[in-house]
Length: 91
Image 1 (cartoon, rainbow, N blue to C red):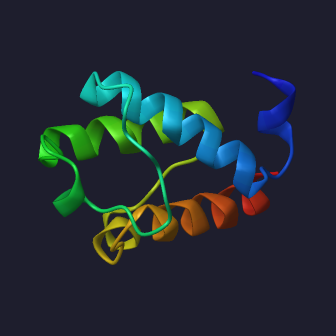
Image 2: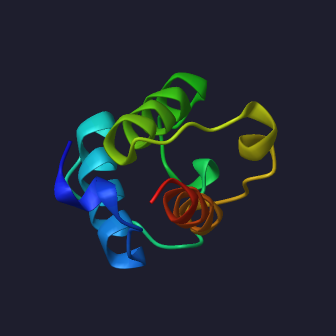
């Protein structure tokens, strides 16, 4: 477990992680992660990619999401906010 997992994450740390994760999952270096980015904006962002993103975040930040929490997310900014909330609770 890394030191960062033991304390609340910053928004910048989360975006850095998501940037790396999205590039790996979608196999494209030109993806720009912004708060308003959504599945409609990224070719190949289907349910399988969504699961990969969620599982990667759960493992990296040592948190767990409930389906109900994920259902209301509209974009990356919403996901970042949820991760911030979860890491504050876990930390």
